[in-house]
Length: 164
Image 1: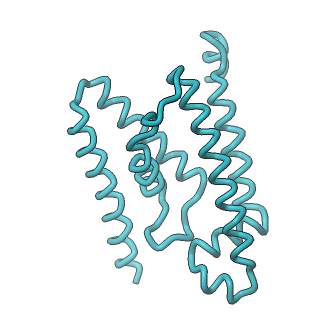
Image 2: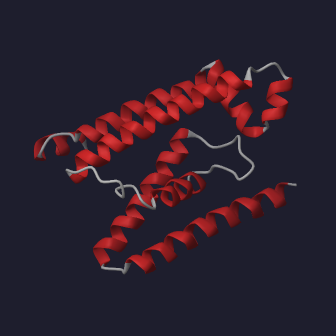
Image 3: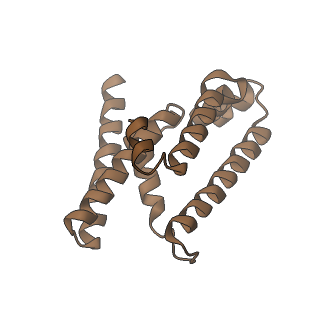
């Protein structure tokens, strides 16, 4: 795969950057104490605080990381569009939420993974790209993406009920 990419126009810089970021955050969330604390906070913040986790510190670092990643995403989007406009990222929030749900994050929190979110983002990207290439109207695209998000949330809730 990488040989074919390198032979064509080279390996995309964004692919390398994304792989590095995913690897770093996957390591942090699965192999470090900070990652376990983040999962504990996502599952039940009150219980995490009662178990001795400094929740304010964890919240601060999680929000700082999200700010860093949002800034990086803004830079990438501006570079990709070759312009910076205030409306460049409109409606991306629904894609991000749908990506997380498709990737396995639960409505109750605490069980999503970085790799799952990336897989969900790939699925949403393929869905967006496919509908654009097929010439679907933007309103139809929003309806389909909303239906996919609704289906992912429904599957999550139904699977939770079956476990209980």
